[in-house]
Image 1 (cartoon, rainbow, N blue to C red):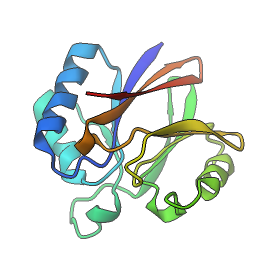
Image 2 (image 1 turned 135 degrees about the horizontal axis):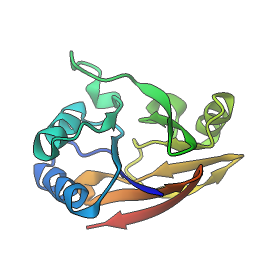
Image 3 (image 1 turned 120 degrees about the vertical axis):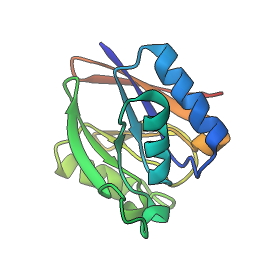
Image 4 (image 1 turned 90 degrees about the horizontal axis):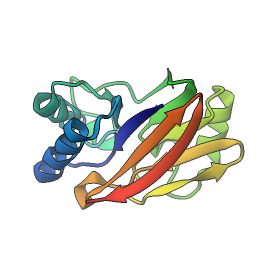
Length: 156
């Protein structure tokens, strides 16, 4: 069993990046994920914790020379994840394209941001999780065990 801290849309809100770093250090998390906007905030998280989160670029990171990839897939603790910001899939109007992409890549779960609205639920066969905007104090904790993902949407 492992807990994963998931953040998105921090938009240089340093006080909340610091709070997320404190949660990470105090909470016994196995992993952290930053879903973009801004990629520099993932680097700030690393400075504060000594841990490099998995990170992807958001729509506001397009001009950053050191931006991470726009999306990636990875297996974490037995579960396959699509990790992206979400802007490429039109998530502000529908989650169908993101769900289809996750299924296409054999990912049972997709992590995304962009909308600034927290969401966790199944669309099609994929579990879609948006932690909400860290700039508003929103984040998610995923408990992953034997490929089963249980999300909690939280706020500080």
